[in-house]
Image (cartoon, rainbow, N blue to C red; front, side, top):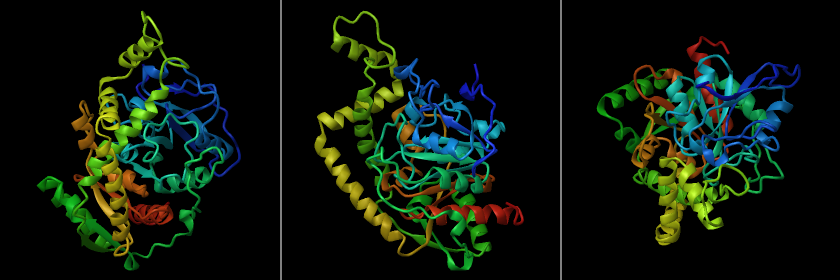
Length: 397
C-alpha cells in the first residue's frame, strides 16, 4: 500500500503556461478531482468518485499546476492520526506543495511534523466548493510547502470569490508580494497564557526563538489574553455540533457502503453510520449530537463566548502587528482528549477565522513558530514568512 498517496495521477502531462506552471501539487483525498476517487479516510464515502473539480482544484489547474495525486487523510480531515500523510509528499519530493483541510490546526501541525511551512488563510478567502468538509464555520483550505514563496503563489491563484460558495464573505486579497516588511517597524505580540502552557524546557526554547526575532530587528511585546484557554472549549462544542450536523449527509443512501441485514431504511442508516465511521470520529459526532439535542443551551453559550473571543482577539492587534504562538509537534490522537490536546495551540485561529502561518524550519529543538494576523491580513503574514525565510538563507528566494 502507498502510505503517502491514496491515489496517484496516472497522467504525467504538465501545463506549460500559468503562474503555477511546473509546480507539482498534492491535494488531500477529501478534495474533489473530477473522475478521481474521493475518500477522506472514511468508508462512509467508499467507492465514491468526484463528479466535478473542487473550486481550489479548478484554479490550480487553470494556473498550470500539475496534480500529483490525492494524499492520505485522517477521517474527514479531523486531526492528524496515524493514517494522515499530510506533508509527506513534500518531504519525499513527490510534490512541491499540498492543499489540505485545516479544521482546528491540521495544516499547521502537519508542517510542524514535517519541518516545512503550513498556512491557514482567513476563513472564506479560498472557496470550499467540492470539499468533503465537516466544520463549515471554522475549516479552511490549508497550504503546505517547503517555502513560503510557494504558499504565496498558490494563494494568489486560488483565493477569491466563487458564486457557488454562499458562505464566502466579500473582501479583497492583497498579494503578499506587495507587502513591505521592515522589522524595525513591526511589533510581534506573544500571548503570555499560550507561552505558559508549554513545558519548562520548551518555554526556554521558545524564548530563544523570540530572541532570534529580536536580533533580526523585530520588537517583541508580551500580552495577556485571560480567555485564551476558552478557544479550545468553544471549538469542542461548536465544532462538534457542526460536524454532527454536516455528517448527516453521509447516510449510505446516495453514496458510501451500506451495512448488510438492515430491515428498513432507518436500520440501514443507523447500522451503516455505526459500522463505517471510525471510533474517534464517532465519539466526536456523538458529543456534537449531545450538545445539539440535550444541551443546546451550552451550544448557544459557546457561540456567545466565541463572538466575545473574536472581539478580544481583534483588540490584541491594536497593540501589535502580528502575534507569535508556539506550536508543538503533534502525537497521533486516539481519544477525544488526545485530539483536543493536539489543537491547544492552533484552535484559536479557527475559532476567530484569522490567518496563521507555521514556520517549522526555524524550530531546531523547540516548538515551531506560528505567526497569526488579524482578519484579512494574509498578505502581511505571508510577507513576514518570506522575509524570515530569505533572511535565514542569506537573501535567496
